[in-house]
Length: 80
Image (cartoon, rainbow, N blue to C red; front, side, top):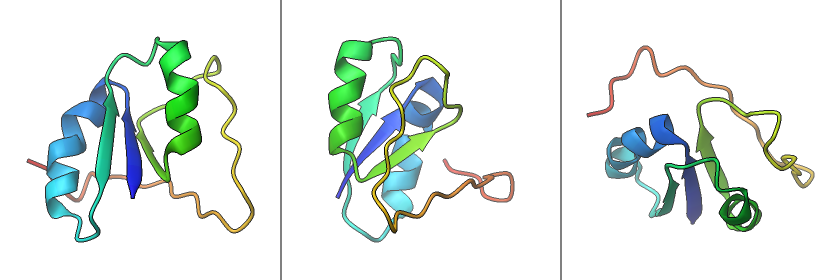
């Protein structure tokens, strides 16, 4: 399952998340979210996107029907 860790915060949490998830993941990490040319194709391929903030300048998040969007807080979980 391809997943995109987008931005610096997500990139720094990627190793801890991948290590603790039981489903095999193929992590794609884009620390520099300003690279719009690289961002659009990665978003199109990703099945999961981990992001701290969705910025107005990002490509629209087009989701097929039956996709679950989760807004979660990690304040109760510490990833190391």
